[in-house]
Image (cartoon, rainbow, N blue to C red; front, side, top):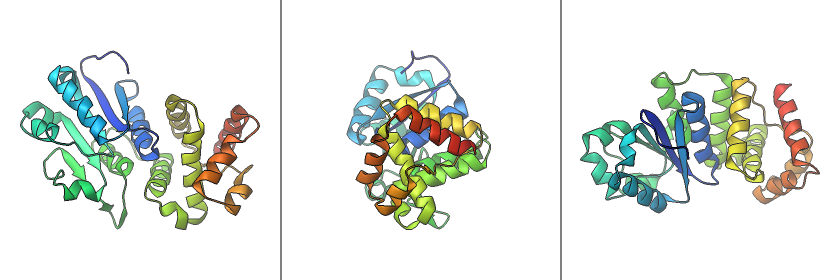
Length: 240
């Protein structure tokens, strides 16, 4: 994470999670380099990090704090609700029923929905809607496609979404096959900026259709002769 500076944004999301990375991609596109991100393994690790930042006051160096895909647990939940600055500048985007069951969704800084517009939602979609509504992003087909593919994968609806579902699963396979999270973030951001997003990997599509299980998709991507050549083929497919 970059050195903290005033008037910056920070986003907390899950590691190794296509929905978590989706939110970071959206934040980078909306705020460019004026956003830090912190990847955590679970909500307990998030709670520890937030508490530490509140205790050492480093969290107040940010003018916007976003949490996606996880609830803010107590006591941080109560600390934020009782702090005028944090309750105004921090926002949680989550789509889990467990967050609602735990009553961690009933304050003004929480945006927790399991369903939205008649379908099961995800944190990237909730965050995307927020960015659109507040003028941080302009809607585009590439952004819509990316968020929908992320939603299909996160909610497991990819299994019943036909060809679009295969593309959504390939998106997750791409994330898992890259060594560094920065590779995925940079790659997706660049493709979206070009407004051309099509994750149909034609060279391996036949194998994936035969066995679209998660392990098989990752194995196919990782077993490619040359990962750089695979990325080039993906880029060519997107640009076509």
